[in-house]
Image (cartoon, rainbow, N blue to C red; front, side, top):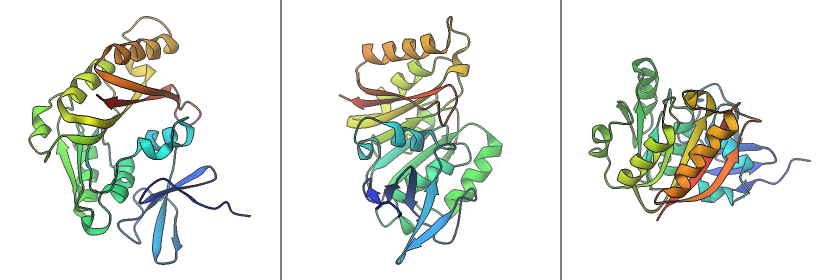
Length: 233
């Protein structure tokens, strides 16, 4: 017997071990993901093996909805790639034709990925793609209508924790939530094994002006990855 869906706020729900977002662009899958109808609403499956945010939602010890932005929020997504996870965030924050009046600034450094992201944005009002190095805060901060309610950083660069802390200080509003996805392989310049690299990043976050809420090991979905959840004080 199918499990009763559990709401994670407007536009997202959990059914057993699967996640779904309310499709803002009915009839269209972004990466071939499964879609299904529930009355007049169409839902898209949100795959945790393709999305670090989805993996964190399934594995958090906190209330999952606390990790997500709300309808109408201003969001900043650093390392947007082709926009798969971004599209699910858009489902919740903006909705069809952006009737929630949300804003998602999606920053990506790869011109190849930016082509896909720009195509996605053409069908999703409120999603603004920016071709830039995420460390260049000035290249996108001026496009943001105000400080972000929610940010996610998913970058393959050295010194990720330092950069996340610096960017959050400039762009995340008081009480805002930040998700920081860290891949150990991107920190190979640092001494020690994967665990010590994660612990080093955790210490930096604890010593920063951010409040560290949780460290989530998502390796069962994304190898060598953890997601840190923070709040701006």
